Image 1: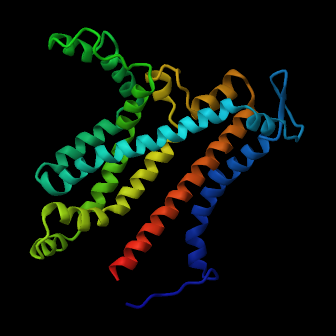
Image 2 (image 1 turned 180 degrees about the horizontal axis):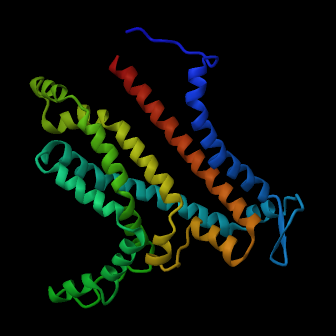
Image 3 (image 1 turned 90 degrees about the vertical axis):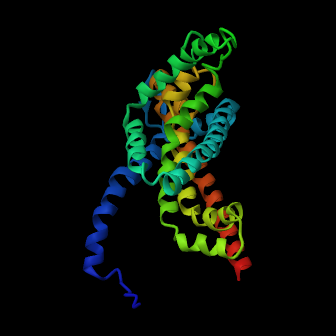
Length: 292
């Protein structure tokens, strides 16, 4: 197959990249630069003062309260990634291999649940997990006790809401990877004497890694900015970064502080993704060397 090499002097190539570059510049680079500039200002009498100093950044690094919330946010995001993948993989595997006759119906149900307003879904969980909610009512009728479940307004309830709202992303990315796997590779493994379990771990799982990685990245990035779940289901008892940034902008009317915290969260997320990419690249290189 002949590979055509293109140069940036090609007007067609430039014309096709200009719209994307303009969108990235207008909706990502410019707001990011404005946020960085805002973080070097101060507020006086609830009004922005253009001073160009490091007072806000000194406050961010001097108060451990901010870093406790950032650490909690990253740890909750990582736990959400692990749980979302554990929930999504069996569903995606069943859709790709066991429920082919019903996969379209199941996909419609999943998409319908995904498109339902997040506020309604989150408050729906409140009705389920409340002391007088549906779950405790059902358990009471089973003889387990009137208040058997008391996890509402705790980090556990926050995690349930996060996984419920975000597990659909790896569900579809993993499904797409599994659907593209050549069935002949699995049959060849069976013919070579491999069991179903060994075929899964040595053939199916490695070939589904692209979808698994992309789904995990989506969940991680979205988890860093969750707002409804900690506020509604967590009751604000264990606030995360999004709530801290919202309070800085709205309650405290301290826009430079909110901008600085936003940049800190972006940097933490970018560094985490870079570390995960490096680990994945190293593992793939080691696996490739072992295969040779």
